[in-house]
Structures are given as C-alpha cells and as structure tokens.
Figure 1 (cartoon, rainbow, N blue to C red):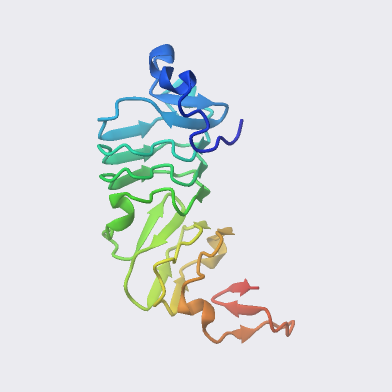
Figure 2 (cartoon, one colour; figure 1 turned 60 degrees about the vertical axis):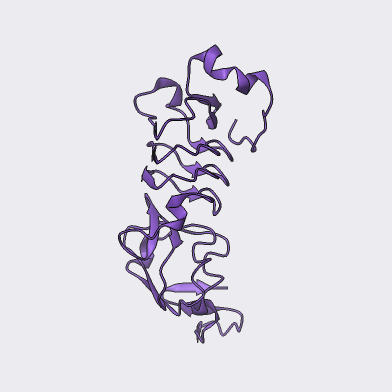
Length: 212
C-alpha cells in the first residue's frame, strides 16, 4: 500500500480500537502512516522512523493523518518520509514548529492549513522551508529568494506572492521539481521575458528556467 485517502477507515474498528489492540500511537498500512491514534493532548510528536521498528518502512503521511490535534505544538518528520499529503495536519491550530523532513520530496499545498505554522512569519521573514522543500512564500516585498540547497518547490508555493516581481535562485541547478501553480500568482510569471533560441512564442527563459 502506497496511498490511503483521507478518512478511508473512519468509524471502523480498525481505527477506533487500533491503539488498544496494537499498543501503538500510529496506524500504519504498508508504507503509509494512516492515522495518529495516540494521546490527543500530546504537544510534541516525533515520527521516529529510525527508533520505532513499525515506522521504519513508512515513507508517506496520509491525508488527514494528524488532523484536529489542537494541543499539538511541534512535530518532527522522521528520515525516510518522502511525502505528506493534503490536510495531513489540518486544523492543528497550535502547531507552530515543524522539524526534520530531510528526505521529503513532496508536501501538498494544504498539508498544514489551519495551523500556526502556516500563518506565522518565520525568523527569515520570507519563506517556510521543510527539509529541501521551499514550502511557502510568506513575505510582503516585491522580490523573493530561493535559497541554495532547495531541491523542490511545493505546489502553490507563491500563493501569497502576488506582489513578487523578481525571484532570485541562489542555485537553480539544485532544483529538480516545481509543483503545480508554484509561481502562478506572481508578477514574475506575467512579466516580459526573453524568448528562447527556438523562437517559440509560448516559451520563455526566466532566471535559468525555461517556462512553457
């Protein structure tokens, strides 16, 4: 099993009695962490894939897996986890800190909706980064920087970047994935651009990228 949809097992004994039956805080199916079934008053959760044997093969956090944990303040994404799907932490209104995530290659645009993490400006004043993912632009200026080391730009990363005219890529060669509509809201996308050598009117080059 590589994907489980949100609330796929809602109302079933599989989920309702999982913690008592299995003695575990996380319901896992195949490679997917389906649902957190531990103490709902926990303020810190560590998805410890290195030390907890039954989490060792987990590479995906399912939609809604940690949703509605209003006491949760901090989460650590363990090594080996590659994907976090939509609404995974939805409504965790006190969640402010997201640690780890070194192996992540995809985080859905709505994975952290309804959390303090997504609504609080970080120390850098401009963007949220999870591991090697540029997750969200949260600045207020007309320029933005994609820092060196970023490999993935999340879907809708610049949904709040309507005033951004200039984007500086510290190392464009690092980037291997750009999510859907990542830059769609920016003035950078609608600015005048230099045509490619092919002369294709529908293609332009911008800061090292060919945008079609």
